[in-house]
Image 1 (tube, one colour):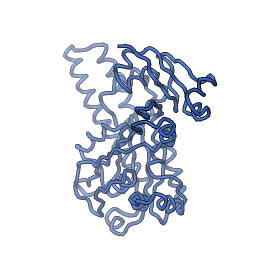
Image 2 (cartoon, one colour):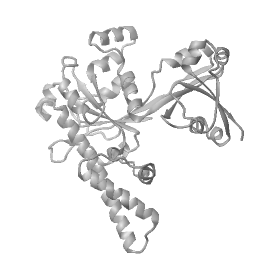
Image 3 (cartoon, rainbow, N blue to C red):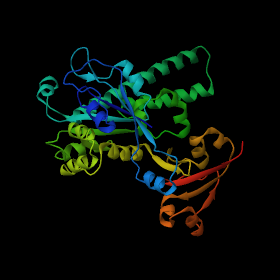
Image 4 (tube, rainbow, N blue to C red):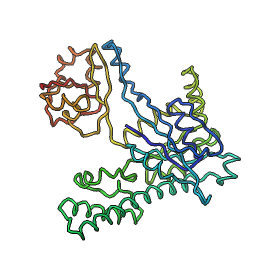
Length: 360
């Protein structure tokens, strides 16, 4: 999964990126004009993985991963504020979900340049920019379809595409994100190639200071009316992420009323918002966590592992992580009657342990 971190310039996107990934990307009071994103791949903190590794003692253990991509915010040419550049927008489209960072901390230099923090206004400006980007793409494509139809190049496919794009255009003009339009599966497939920004799940990260963390319930409530919201003490959590002594870092977080790392909190919220689950493959060679969309089937899980497993799928041997822990080992799972054989259409559940039988 790729999570694109976006927001207005100096909202603290890179600080959040560093806190999430333990990176040391440059953080400065003034914009450097950089467009290239910062990218890091991090393991998903899943407490079930080390338990499975201890039980099976495999040669290697592999966690699920998330790509975090920190996109630069740049200043408008007229100096009236900040938005994303064209090149950055094209990169944002590769993300599976967006994390919109808004500033909720005081800073003398930033306050004098951009004004005092106003997280609700910042969020509105970012989402307006995303809507505008999608509207431009939609109108451009509709003009091309209309031109083709005038030339006699009209088909059932182009008519279906035109119909869904007209619906999207109407929604965007009414400030409705594409994700809120309740499009059918066929309609979503029709527009998949456009990688619309407002069709992606979005999370708002309120970047607070150490001195006001947890003291803005009205901001959280206002932003939470439209999107899932999470609050970070960005600069504080970035510094703690660099401590080598994890127990010391946990103690400092606890002092601020934070019980989990920034990465762990965002991962859980992102999985829930995007609709993802984890399943596992286990054995003496490897214990591994895999990511799947909730509701996907055993054959789709097989394809996540390797295309050959999906092509030659026969059955999935299946039991749950909790059944294994309760029974103590696979023999105990079988004795308890919790070991199952599932077919192609079985909907994989979070925590399922799968072994795919296949023949190619």
